[in-house]
Image (cartoon, rainbow, N blue to C red; front, side, top):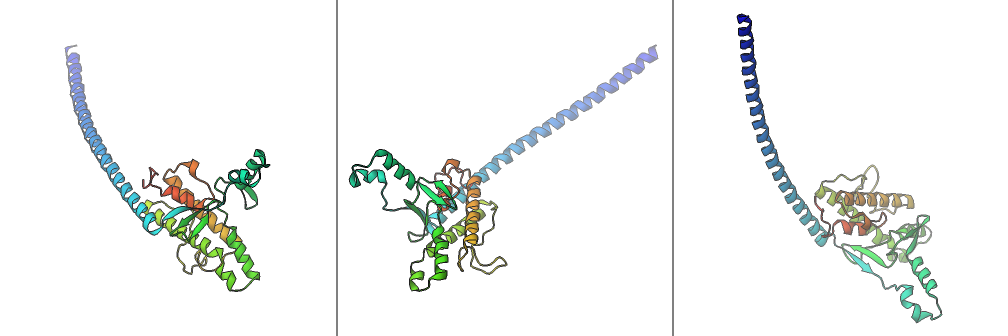
Length: 264
């Protein structure tokens, strides 16, 4: 019995010493984990600081880019709303007629369907200068209408009064701006659009060079609008401000100084 008690006592001592070693290892691991936690927290803070600095640099570059090279602004037209001139033009016109006319002016027939647009034809958006503008409502049908008309009508007047020049130039500049923004923001675009007038396997730049057919033109515009919306989503632009057809206006919202997450 005495020998049995001694063996049990020795085994208990061994277990106690082993428990002490495990406790020491546990405390060592806990100290190591605390050091790693402090290091991770420090590195995370440094990373957040660097991200903030990078975001500020991106934001500064974008604001400089859009104020010096690609300035955009809204261009108002002189059209007046029927409600404003109802009392002047026809005293007998009822308020319901005025409201219907106003509603009709806010509706655009685009690509085979009616689209509600509060801005309609009252405004355009310019890029790089007041002479290069796009309709705010996204109706660029004047481009391919002119291209189709040119096929049947020739003469200097067709080149002089060419809406395709300003529309294609504005879209070309918008493509250049979008591709540059994607590089600054480090955002991969879902659609590939070339912004240089070079010969590739797919042909020339979508909006520069040769006149495009209606199919090629509308396809290129859809790709450009998709890229712009993708950039807007990446910078958390307010979705209520965006419209899938408003090419330059969406760009204006994207690069606006009021966009809090621009550059992040």
